[in-house]
Length: 244
Image (cartoon, rainbow, N blue to C red; front, side, top):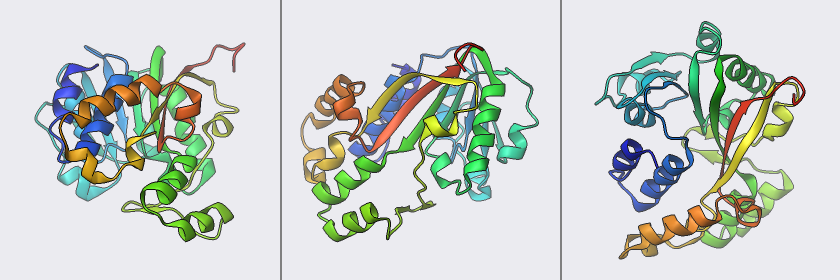
C-alpha cells in the first residue's frame, strides 16, 4: 500500500469512493523518488497524493479542472492532452497513470496514439497503470443494484449508450488497442466486483469499509470475480522485441 495515497483516499466523502481509491492505492506499485505522469489527471487528487514523495507531472485537458486542481504537495499541472504527450522526452517516467480516461476518447486511432506515446515515455522497468470501465460490471450494476432491466437490455442490444457525468463511455478492448504497440500486461485486477452490487445503506455501517476492502483485494486477481467487476485495473510494461 502507498501510505500517502491511503491517507489521502481515506478522506474521500463517501465510503464507496474511499474504497475505490484505497483499492487503486493498494494495487499500484509503491513509489518513492520516482518520476510520474498522470494523464487525464482531473482535479489532481492522485497526482497530489503521489507528489509527497515523487516528482509528478499531471496533464488534464479540462481548463476548469486545471484551474481548480488540488495541490497540497508541489507538482506540475499542465492543461493538455495527446499533443503535450508528444513533446515529452522518451523513457522519462517510471510510472504513468491513465485512470478512466481512454473510454471518453471516441476515436480508436487516438486511443492507440496515446498508448503508443505511453510506450515511448515509460522507462524500461517502469509501469503504466490503466483503469477502465468494464462492460460486464456495468450490466451487473444496472440489473442487480439499480433494477434498470430495460436499460440493461438496451445496452446489451447496442440500442443505448452508457453515459456518466463526463460523457458517453466508449468501452474498448486494451489487447486490441495494443496489438501493434510494444506493451504487455504485467498485472490485471478487478475493482468493484462486490460493493457496486450492494445497497448504499450497507456502506455506511460499522466496519463495512475494512471488510469490503479485504474481500475486494482477496478476489481482485481471480478471473471469475475480476471479469464481473465494474472497473478493470491493468498494469502494463514495455515488451521486449521477442514479446511484442
